[in-house]
Length: 200
Image 1 (cartoon, rainbow, N blue to C red):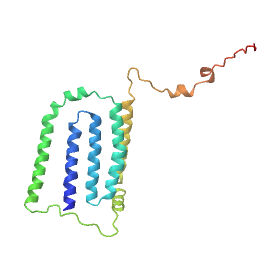
Image 2 (image 1 turned 180 degrees about the vertical axis):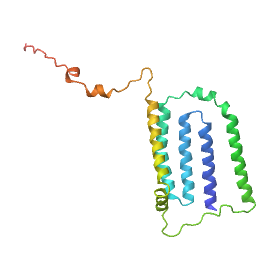
Image 3 (image 1 turned 30 degrees about the horizontal axis):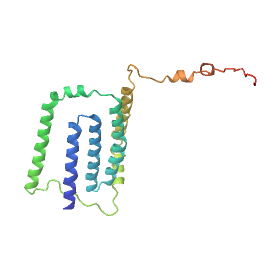
Image 4 (image 1 turned 135 degrees about the vertical axis):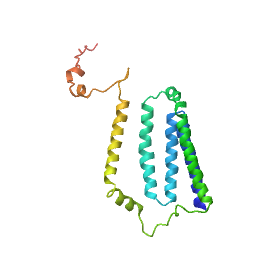
């Protein structure tokens, strides 16, 4: 009973935060709502005894990826007015996707009302079971190539984000490393000999 109360509580907050991500007018607020989504999703992972995935979700996504998103959003200098102009253009597609999600929710609740257990429930873990070891065994054996491919994709995304922030804009001060390395003492330091006046 307590597990169901916790699930519905955090799931409700998760859905509300997800709505806040797409409905917020400020991109920084959207990122903060996304952080809230990840934190509530981590609690849902804990409810099914997947502690490793929950802590990875908090440390990696909330602690690193969301901070990166936040800095990228703030450095890109996004024009909010331009984004609002195209909002109504995608409204029909968004409404269709929302309708599909509502139908899926209704189907799940309808099946549960009939008393059919289609999920089979969550079986308790045996004594001494380590989901960290199980995830590592699967990740580095069966899915080692997709794991490496995901790392390469994330690296490309980081390089692209840096490239977008370093684009040339009027009044932008850039760093010329070659000029800094080739600097000479005569170009930066000027020794001035000051004559000392006699004591009076």
